[in-house]
Image 1 (cartoon, helix red, strand yellow):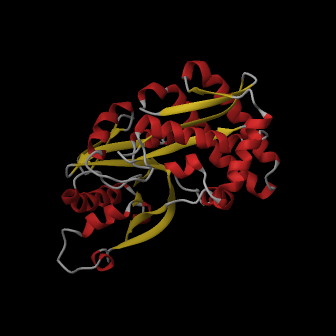
Image 2 (image 1 turned 90 degrees about the horizontal axis):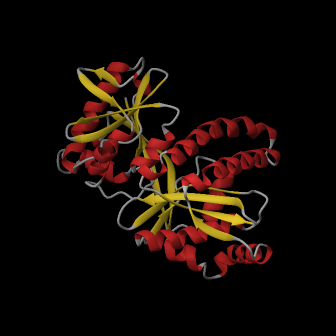
Image 3 (image 1 turned 45 degrees about the vertical axis):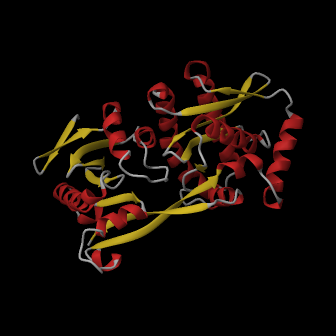
Length: 326
């Protein structure tokens, strides 16, 4: 399926051909959350059907799931065009969907919400302006100062420093390499499969089913990331111990000040490896992009992941919202 037409508006299939166009609209905004890049959406749509269109001079990204249409991001473009585009997009979704509940816009930054009401009557507060809509606060992105992640100063980071020092002492023959999909791709998939197996061993049985549902999508995302690596404007590093790949991480630039980590995996049984590669990649992102901040995305609602991300003392927690129409 290459085109979906709703209300006489053609929605094109979201693939690599949309990259330059989407990036041109992303340049018109300055948002630091991890979802606002081409690569993030492209790799995570590997098992779903994405569509896009230029509506009211904004880039609009839709996902078709079970025949129901929703938006993965709000309309991207100039501030003065966003309000009209959101209304137009809800009209498109409602025309397709079996119920208005399925019509929603996810991963909305506060800046976009402000743009939504900026062109309404002066003095109208945001919740009055959005009285025809339901706004739900969902997850938050964890954003850190890159120098904090590199230096790990103070008592707050004492455990991180100890874990890294123990890793370096136990594995003096480790080495870091810049990720090369041809050289490292097969070993990355092998490591990921081992990571899944190890994680399920130590996980309560009642959590395994939910975990494996997520892993299904993550496996496809990693394969797409590796296959299209050179086309996606991403950067990555890998870590070896005794010539065996034990960890990898991939990220990209979000804006002039902020980079993000798209994915990171290390051998669950190599203690300190995760902390070590995270610090090394922070150095890499600073050197490669001159980044001041590193965004590691949200915690997907997992309490253990939240604890890990909070343990690194984020500088900012940036909320993301979903918009529904009443």
